Amino acid sequence: MKLILEAWRGFLQEKDEREPQDSSKVAKIVLVDSNKNVLFLKRTNYMKKFAGEWDLPGGHVHVGETLKDGLIREVEEETSLSIKRCRLYTKIDNLYFFEGVYEQGSIVLSNEHSEYEFRNVSELENPSKFEKVAQMVVSDAKL
Image (cartoon, rainbow, N blue to C red; front, side, top):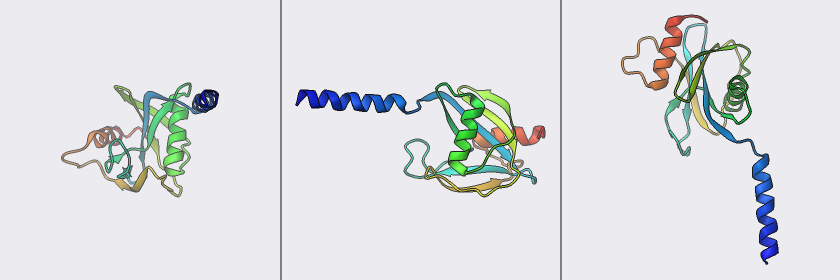
């Protein structure tokens, strides 16, 4: 029995080592459309962190992955969108915010998000943390 448990433990450890590991770095993108509206995603209620909150597309970068590659992967996983051009805008703690232009494409959400919307963030009175960053990107108009 002990040999079976040891073999099983070894199998599980091998599998875990092949899985990409998340780093502490998080890459998010402020995707702005032609009307200067920003794409936001609503996290599903079953998510362990920030359930039901509105979020920018993006997520954890894997260990060994560049910030840009991690961002492109996360956005594609979450929305089915392909990021063609993006630029690092700012860094706040472990969060790296990129700016980009939403050109076109059908948004298909992963199971992490329940809905999406494009928001005009310019005139929000009490913006959330991500809305504040989106306001800065839109007001700088470098896109």
